[in-house]
Image 1 (cartoon, rainbow, N blue to C red):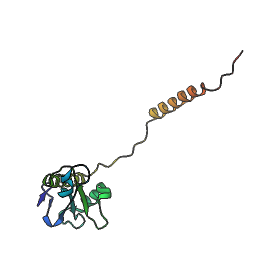
Image 2: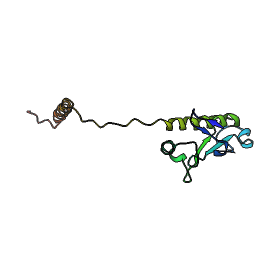
Image 3: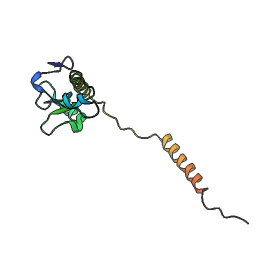
Image 4: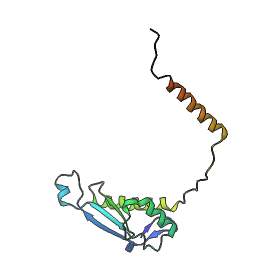
Length: 140
């Protein structure tokens, strides 16, 4: 069981780990040992995640969210299989914790009259400066 916070705990049946060989440098070790971990979390079927958390998690996951509602995290940071497993689980917990926080609603505000005037004045000054860059008609 993986504890996220006081309310959310992920059961073992929701997580699947698949080990593959990592890409990149590593010498002979990289060709022999399957150190990269692919952690699959069945998020859509999880009874422990509330619906709003699932929807925010889907948005945060992006391309890591599959069509059947699973979240796939691939970690090949270290040469140690055990450490990669830990990192994958930590990243999953971080992602779920981020999804538990409800984003603050943005309240639309209108620009003040003073800010509108400042903007127009700046545009006028900039336009005047640019108009001085024109062709010079010389008095020879």
